[in-house]
Amino acid sequence: MLYLYGLWLGLESVVRGHITREAMKNIIVPVNYWRTLEFKVVLNELRPSHLDTILDIGSPKLLSLYLADKVGASVFATDIENYFTHDYEIFRSLRRIPKERLRIQTVDGRKLQFSENSFDKVFSISVLEHIPEHGDIECVKEIARVLKPGGLCVITIPFAPVSRDEFKDSKDFYWSGSSTSDAAAKRVFFQRRYDENDIHERLAKPSGLKLTNLLYLGETFPFLRKRELSEFLPPITGTIQPLMSTLFHTTPSKTWRTLKRPLGALIVLSK
Image (cartoon, rainbow, N blue to C red):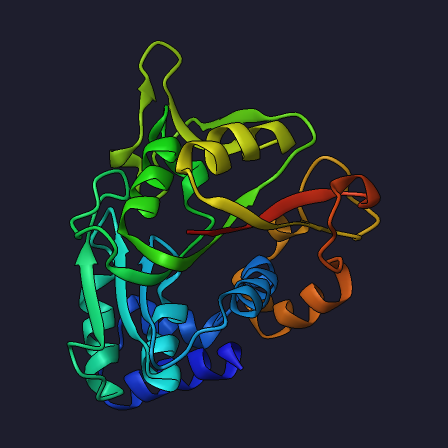
């Protein structure tokens, strides 16, 4: 569903003369291998409605656009960098989505610019792990503040049986300017892989919200042990990546110990 929506969006943009980076990305890889699984499980838990006011913290913006366009929800699509704002303003115009139904903003998740009890639902797909130092803890506290009583928050993060921080030697990712650097080692913090204890101690407990569901996501591809299949998929494979997700991603599990290669977690919090 999202794959076809993204593909059509990219084609419509190009046909109308808007040959942008995001338009070409939507044509080549509308929804990639890992996002296919994440979008599916997030939508299943989020259960969006046209009555909802929803906050997206840093997630891939295709889902926000879809929720505003096809579901009719009131969506605030945010990120710490403004890389997406120009192209998604074009998409919003092409789809004739009113500005009051899709607000596109640059916001730091650690200091949300919204009042308390503003949102029915919040989602953040593969974002919190990239916030350096204790920023992920600050972010979940902010989510709790802006979430309405009875509201729902759905988060995905990378998982490992033993947590670890991962760094990159170069600034080849768009939010590197908002990350922290180790000048001596010439490295930039890229992400944190959470273990089971981290999920409770860094995210669930500090938020003050109720942990209502925790599912683990994994991969069954038999030929890799220490790396993920997604690292080896060039853009040319974009058309078959959703199929590969169906073949090689596991059914979400209540425990990571049943998975041969646990790689991610879905966290659902309620207020």
